[in-house]
Image 1: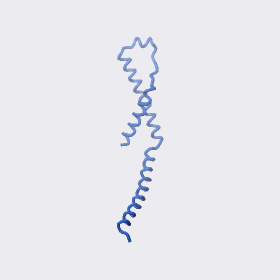
Image 2: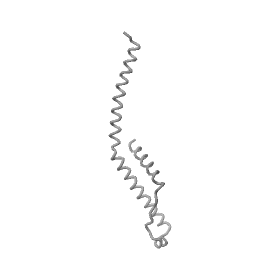
Image 3: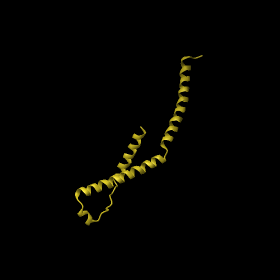
Image 4: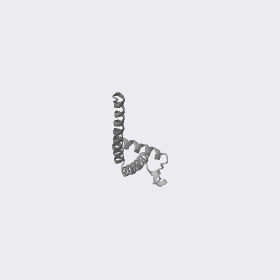
Length: 101
């Protein structure tokens, strides 16, 4: 479940940043003319892949820095305590409605 959440967040953040993504030209025009189509496509794919991996790694590091698992665990524990208190109160009220003294 946690992995699915992280992957979903990373995919969403990557999709948001893809819109402004530009690939820098690293090769001079003379060298581009000497390269074949397959080499150009392979180099472009490699640069896209490397940038995507670097971006995802950065997002993953920032998510780990937020300590989301610890916050979610604390939130669950506090909510459980509060709900048990209120369910006890409601139970007492219902009991006294049916068994009045």
